[in-house]
Image 1 (cartoon, rainbow, N blue to C red):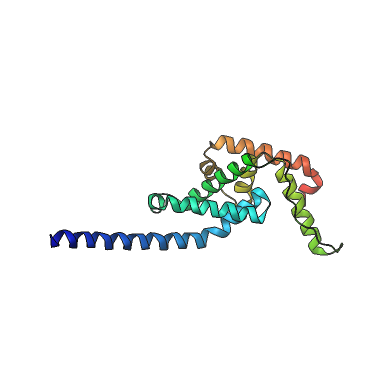
Image 2: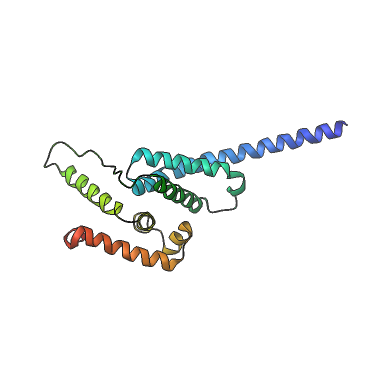
Length: 183
């Protein structure tokens, strides 16, 4: 009988130790990945608060499956995929008439204003693209991922990434004009 009790205590201790190790790994992952995930989410939704919510949702979903994924998958790619799925789901629920804009500076003529205007113009142009095309442009050209990596993250073929990227960039050039493309 004492062997069974001591065996159960040993199993319980090992289980707690493994869980503590997994939790430490998750905390380290969160610290490293949160800025990247939040930035990507912001580029997709143009709202820092919503980007933070999407990042938290992504991390919560990852924690729920952490026991299964923590040593078996590429966590960066997996987190991007979970984030993109959260963005796509959020877009399906959100009204298309809602537009999020940043407050512009009050004083004209400052050098920072040119940067702010450029940022607002780019974000508005990006917002005109379908959400999947936005994801491709952000992952491919902002985060500088390869076509293969973007295809893996979004769960599409490389030819889809190439075709949609080409069309999306063409649409952005069309919206922004040739003069803007030279900046």
